[in-house]
Image 1 (cartoon, rainbow, N blue to C red):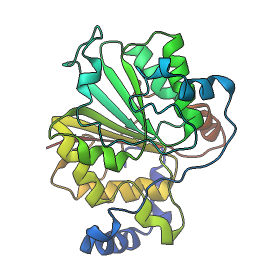
Image 2 (cartoon, one colour; image 1 turned 180 degrees about the vertical axis):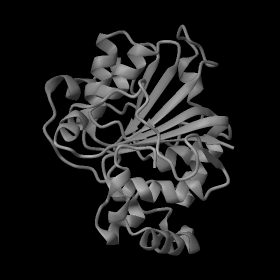
Image 3 (tube, rainbow, N blue to C red; image 1 turned 30 degrees about the vertical axis):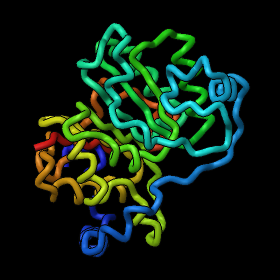
Length: 266
Protein backbone atom coordinates (compact mmCIF):
# COMPACT_ATOMS: atom_id res chain seq x y z
CA UNK A 1 0.00 0.00 0.00
CA UNK A 2 1.33 3.41 -0.88
CA UNK A 3 0.16 4.90 2.39
CA UNK A 4 1.82 5.86 5.64
CA UNK A 5 -0.35 3.24 7.35
CA UNK A 6 0.87 0.32 5.26
CA UNK A 7 2.16 -1.56 8.29
CA UNK A 8 -1.36 -1.68 9.75
CA UNK A 9 -2.74 -4.06 7.11
CA UNK A 10 -1.94 -7.06 9.31
CA UNK A 11 -4.60 -5.92 11.78
CA UNK A 12 -7.35 -6.16 9.16
CA UNK A 13 -9.03 -9.47 8.33
CA UNK A 14 -9.64 -9.09 4.61
CA UNK A 15 -11.40 -12.45 4.41
CA UNK A 16 -13.90 -11.25 7.01
CA UNK A 17 -14.53 -8.07 4.99
CA UNK A 18 -14.98 -10.07 1.79
CA UNK A 19 -17.40 -12.46 3.47
CA UNK A 20 -19.56 -9.71 4.89
CA UNK A 21 -19.62 -7.82 1.60
CA UNK A 22 -20.59 -10.97 -0.27
CA UNK A 23 -23.57 -11.45 2.05
CA UNK A 24 -24.67 -7.87 1.50
CA UNK A 25 -24.33 -8.21 -2.28
CA UNK A 26 -26.48 -11.33 -2.37
CA UNK A 27 -29.63 -9.47 -1.32
CA UNK A 28 -29.00 -5.75 -1.91
CA UNK A 29 -32.70 -4.95 -2.19
CA UNK A 30 -33.04 -5.57 1.57
CA UNK A 31 -30.71 -2.71 2.36
CA UNK A 32 -31.87 0.07 0.04
CA UNK A 33 -34.15 1.59 2.66
CA UNK A 34 -31.75 1.27 5.58
CA UNK A 35 -30.47 4.70 6.57
CA UNK A 36 -26.74 5.34 6.28
CA UNK A 37 -27.08 8.26 8.69
CA UNK A 38 -28.41 9.06 12.15
CA UNK A 39 -29.82 12.47 13.04
CA UNK A 40 -28.21 13.71 16.24
CA UNK A 41 -29.36 16.55 18.45
CA UNK A 42 -26.54 18.97 19.21
CA UNK A 43 -26.26 22.65 20.06
CA UNK A 44 -27.17 25.05 17.26
CA UNK A 45 -25.98 28.65 17.31
CA UNK A 46 -28.24 31.57 16.40
CA UNK A 47 -26.70 32.10 12.96
CA UNK A 48 -27.27 28.49 11.96
CA UNK A 49 -30.87 28.57 13.19
CA UNK A 50 -31.47 31.83 11.35
CA UNK A 51 -30.29 30.28 8.09
CA UNK A 52 -32.70 27.37 8.56
CA UNK A 53 -35.71 29.58 9.32
CA UNK A 54 -35.23 32.76 7.27
CA UNK A 55 -36.28 32.40 3.62
CA UNK A 56 -33.55 34.78 2.47
CA UNK A 57 -31.25 31.74 2.70
CA UNK A 58 -33.42 29.72 0.30
CA UNK A 59 -31.07 30.53 -2.59
CA UNK A 60 -28.40 28.51 -0.73
CA UNK A 61 -30.45 25.78 0.98
CA UNK A 62 -32.11 24.32 -2.09
CA UNK A 63 -34.97 22.63 -0.21
CA UNK A 64 -35.38 25.33 2.43
CA UNK A 65 -38.60 24.74 4.41
CA UNK A 66 -38.36 27.46 7.08
CA UNK A 67 -38.55 24.92 9.91
CA UNK A 68 -36.17 23.22 12.30
CA UNK A 69 -36.26 19.55 13.23
CA UNK A 70 -37.39 18.05 9.92
CA UNK A 71 -35.47 15.89 7.48
CA UNK A 72 -35.52 17.78 4.20
CA UNK A 73 -37.63 16.64 1.25
CA UNK A 74 -35.40 15.99 -1.78
CA UNK A 75 -38.09 14.65 -4.10
CA UNK A 76 -38.19 17.81 -6.22
CA UNK A 77 -34.41 17.98 -6.68
CA UNK A 78 -33.92 16.27 -10.02
CA UNK A 79 -31.44 18.63 -11.71
CA UNK A 80 -28.75 20.19 -9.53
CA UNK A 81 -27.12 22.15 -12.31
CA UNK A 82 -30.16 24.35 -12.83
CA UNK A 83 -29.54 26.01 -9.44
CA UNK A 84 -26.42 27.68 -10.84
CA UNK A 85 -28.11 29.09 -13.95
CA UNK A 86 -28.04 32.65 -12.62
CA UNK A 87 -24.51 32.49 -11.22
CA UNK A 88 -21.23 33.54 -12.89
CA UNK A 89 -20.22 29.89 -13.38
CA UNK A 90 -23.49 28.88 -15.02
CA UNK A 91 -24.77 25.33 -15.40
CA UNK A 92 -21.85 23.85 -17.35
CA UNK A 93 -19.11 24.35 -14.75
CA UNK A 94 -17.70 21.21 -13.10
CA UNK A 95 -20.08 20.13 -10.35
CA UNK A 96 -19.07 18.44 -7.09
CA UNK A 97 -21.52 16.82 -4.67
CA UNK A 98 -20.27 16.24 -1.13
CA UNK A 99 -22.20 13.69 0.91
CA UNK A 100 -22.20 14.39 4.65
CA UNK A 101 -20.20 17.61 5.05
CA UNK A 102 -20.53 17.81 8.84
CA UNK A 103 -20.10 21.38 10.07
CA UNK A 104 -19.08 22.50 6.59
CA UNK A 105 -15.60 23.92 7.14
CA UNK A 106 -13.77 21.86 4.51
CA UNK A 107 -16.52 22.24 1.89
CA UNK A 108 -16.58 26.00 2.46
CA UNK A 109 -12.80 26.10 2.03
CA UNK A 110 -12.93 24.05 -1.17
CA UNK A 111 -15.62 26.28 -2.71
CA UNK A 112 -13.65 29.37 -1.72
CA UNK A 113 -10.40 28.00 -3.17
CA UNK A 114 -11.94 26.75 -6.43
CA UNK A 115 -14.33 29.50 -7.59
CA UNK A 116 -14.43 28.03 -11.10
CA UNK A 117 -16.22 24.90 -9.82
CA UNK A 118 -19.74 24.53 -8.44
CA UNK A 119 -20.27 22.68 -5.16
CA UNK A 120 -23.35 21.21 -3.48
CA UNK A 121 -23.29 19.58 -0.06
CA UNK A 122 -25.99 17.32 1.35
CA UNK A 123 -26.27 16.69 5.10
CA UNK A 124 -28.85 15.74 7.75
CA UNK A 125 -27.12 17.51 10.67
CA UNK A 126 -29.03 20.77 10.96
CA UNK A 127 -26.40 22.77 12.90
CA UNK A 128 -23.97 22.06 10.06
CA UNK A 129 -26.51 22.84 7.33
CA UNK A 130 -27.40 26.17 8.88
CA UNK A 131 -23.83 27.08 9.69
CA UNK A 132 -22.54 26.40 6.18
CA UNK A 133 -25.45 28.29 4.58
CA UNK A 134 -24.79 31.28 6.82
CA UNK A 135 -21.06 31.26 6.01
CA UNK A 136 -21.71 30.96 2.27
CA UNK A 137 -24.12 33.90 2.40
CA UNK A 138 -21.70 36.05 4.39
CA UNK A 139 -18.89 35.29 1.94
CA UNK A 140 -21.18 35.81 -1.09
CA UNK A 141 -20.19 32.42 -2.51
CA UNK A 142 -22.25 31.91 -5.64
CA UNK A 143 -20.73 28.48 -6.33
CA UNK A 144 -21.91 26.74 -3.15
CA UNK A 145 -25.38 25.31 -2.40
CA UNK A 146 -26.67 23.13 0.45
CA UNK A 147 -29.31 20.40 0.72
CA UNK A 148 -30.98 19.03 3.85
CA UNK A 149 -31.79 15.37 3.36
CA UNK A 150 -30.97 11.77 2.53
CA UNK A 151 -28.16 11.43 -0.03
CA UNK A 152 -29.40 8.04 -1.27
CA UNK A 153 -32.83 9.49 -2.07
CA UNK A 154 -31.16 12.39 -3.85
CA UNK A 155 -28.96 10.11 -5.96
CA UNK A 156 -32.04 8.14 -7.03
CA UNK A 157 -33.59 11.38 -8.36
CA UNK A 158 -30.64 12.56 -10.43
CA UNK A 159 -30.16 11.85 -14.14
CA UNK A 160 -27.37 9.73 -15.54
CA UNK A 161 -23.96 11.35 -16.09
CA UNK A 162 -24.90 14.43 -14.06
CA UNK A 163 -21.98 15.05 -11.69
CA UNK A 164 -18.25 15.53 -12.20
CA UNK A 165 -17.27 14.54 -8.65
CA UNK A 166 -18.82 12.88 -5.62
CA UNK A 167 -16.90 13.18 -2.37
CA UNK A 168 -17.40 11.40 0.93
CA UNK A 169 -15.12 12.70 3.66
CA UNK A 170 -15.01 11.02 7.08
CA UNK A 171 -18.42 9.32 6.90
CA UNK A 172 -19.91 7.55 9.89
CA UNK A 173 -17.88 4.30 10.03
CA UNK A 174 -20.66 2.31 11.75
CA UNK A 175 -17.93 0.34 13.49
CA UNK A 176 -20.16 -2.31 15.12
CA UNK A 177 -20.44 -5.43 12.97
CA UNK A 178 -24.24 -5.45 13.10
CA UNK A 179 -24.20 -1.92 11.62
CA UNK A 180 -21.85 -2.59 8.69
CA UNK A 181 -24.89 -2.69 6.40
CA UNK A 182 -25.40 1.03 7.15
CA UNK A 183 -22.02 2.01 5.74
CA UNK A 184 -22.47 4.24 2.73
CA UNK A 185 -19.92 2.39 0.63
CA UNK A 186 -21.54 -0.85 -0.46
CA UNK A 187 -21.75 -2.17 -4.00
CA UNK A 188 -25.45 -1.36 -4.27
CA UNK A 189 -25.04 2.26 -3.15
CA UNK A 190 -21.89 2.83 -5.16
CA UNK A 191 -23.72 1.71 -8.31
CA UNK A 192 -25.99 4.70 -7.71
CA UNK A 193 -22.93 6.95 -7.45
CA UNK A 194 -21.46 5.50 -10.65
CA UNK A 195 -24.70 6.10 -12.54
CA UNK A 196 -24.86 9.82 -11.75
CA UNK A 197 -21.17 10.45 -12.40
CA UNK A 198 -20.08 11.60 -15.83
CA UNK A 199 -17.74 9.32 -17.78
CA UNK A 200 -14.28 9.72 -16.20
CA UNK A 201 -15.96 11.42 -13.22
CA UNK A 202 -14.39 11.05 -9.79
CA UNK A 203 -15.39 9.49 -6.49
CA UNK A 204 -13.15 10.61 -3.61
CA UNK A 205 -13.45 9.20 -0.10
CA UNK A 206 -11.42 9.77 3.05
CA UNK A 207 -11.66 8.06 6.43
CA UNK A 208 -9.77 7.81 9.69
CA UNK A 209 -11.16 4.32 10.42
CA UNK A 210 -8.77 1.64 9.20
CA UNK A 211 -11.39 -1.09 8.85
CA UNK A 212 -13.66 1.15 6.78
CA UNK A 213 -10.70 2.18 4.59
CA UNK A 214 -9.99 -1.42 3.63
CA UNK A 215 -13.74 -2.11 3.36
CA UNK A 216 -14.03 0.68 0.76
CA UNK A 217 -10.95 -0.56 -1.06
CA UNK A 218 -12.47 -4.05 -1.26
CA UNK A 219 -15.81 -2.74 -2.55
CA UNK A 220 -14.48 -0.32 -5.14
CA UNK A 221 -11.58 -2.35 -6.48
CA UNK A 222 -14.06 -5.10 -7.33
CA UNK A 223 -16.54 -2.90 -9.18
CA UNK A 224 -16.10 -2.68 -12.97
CA UNK A 225 -17.69 0.79 -12.86
CA UNK A 226 -14.60 2.24 -11.14
CA UNK A 227 -10.85 2.48 -11.70
CA UNK A 228 -8.53 3.04 -8.74
CA UNK A 229 -6.39 6.03 -9.79
CA UNK A 230 -3.59 4.90 -7.46
CA UNK A 231 -3.65 1.32 -8.79
CA UNK A 232 -5.55 -1.70 -7.53
CA UNK A 233 -5.07 -2.28 -3.83
CA UNK A 234 -3.55 1.15 -3.27
CA UNK A 235 -4.55 4.22 -1.30
CA UNK A 236 -3.91 7.78 -2.50
CA UNK A 237 -1.83 10.31 -0.56
CA UNK A 238 -4.02 13.18 0.63
CA UNK A 239 -4.41 15.56 -2.34
CA UNK A 240 -3.69 19.23 -1.69
CA UNK A 241 -7.23 20.23 -2.69
CA UNK A 242 -8.77 18.31 0.24
CA UNK A 243 -8.46 20.55 3.31
CA UNK A 244 -7.41 18.97 6.56
CA UNK A 245 -10.01 19.32 9.29
CA UNK A 246 -9.03 20.23 12.84
CA UNK A 247 -10.06 16.75 13.96
CA UNK A 248 -7.89 15.16 11.27
CA UNK A 249 -4.89 17.25 12.30
CA UNK A 250 -5.46 16.34 15.93
CA UNK A 251 -5.68 12.66 15.05
CA UNK A 252 -2.48 12.74 13.01
CA UNK A 253 -0.71 14.40 15.94
CA UNK A 254 -1.74 11.43 18.08
CA UNK A 255 -0.58 8.93 15.46
CA UNK A 256 -3.98 8.07 14.02
CA UNK A 257 -4.15 7.12 10.37
CA UNK A 258 -6.08 8.78 7.54
CA UNK A 259 -6.77 7.06 4.24
CA UNK A 260 -7.79 8.66 0.92
CA UNK A 261 -9.26 6.72 -2.00
CA UNK A 262 -9.81 8.29 -5.44
CA UNK A 263 -11.64 6.38 -8.16
CA UNK A 264 -12.52 7.31 -11.71
CA UNK A 265 -15.68 6.15 -13.43
CA UNK A 266 -14.72 3.64 -16.11
